[in-house]
Image (tube, rainbow, N blue to C red):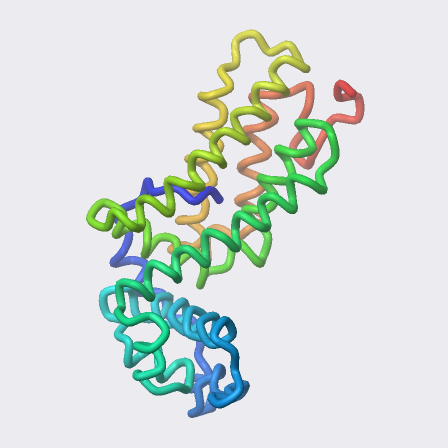
Length: 247
């Protein structure tokens, strides 16, 4: 994934995605309320609870249709508690996007640190990350596209997205640069390869969100591997790496 602000046209589609909720499964009480202890929860715990409820509401209803009352009901709390912690819907949405971005950044850094010293290993691991169940989840994808759909008119969203975009782009382009040098690919542009990977993963995320019957996570990763194989044939094959890749 990258946290990229390139898809501002799909907000309406995003709002159409409605994952199952507790009430749809025959439970009239929001799931968050089952674990609710309004008198003892810490400030940080309460804020996370409200952010989680916000994410569920946005994925189900879309951003513009989500109200503070919706969030309060989803969390099993009063609207006054929402106002106490965030003061306004704008603040709540800003913090929800920040939480989403920070969560991805932590997974990104952890994946990179565990991938080993080889640039090809690191790049492959980062591409795999974008299609893991914890990342390529329809609720989270709906959230990303909902926020990206508002980036043009909301500078706060753009700032949050741009902060990670720059970091992500530098890492991926740096890995492509290292692979090009290692494999002696004189006709490959690192920036072009990195931009293609970013655009591809974003596009595949959109396909997984709006056409789940046609695309799943495995097929999306296969498409990325096909591209890597075509650009860096000494390092990648369709399912991973060539056994004789440069060490």
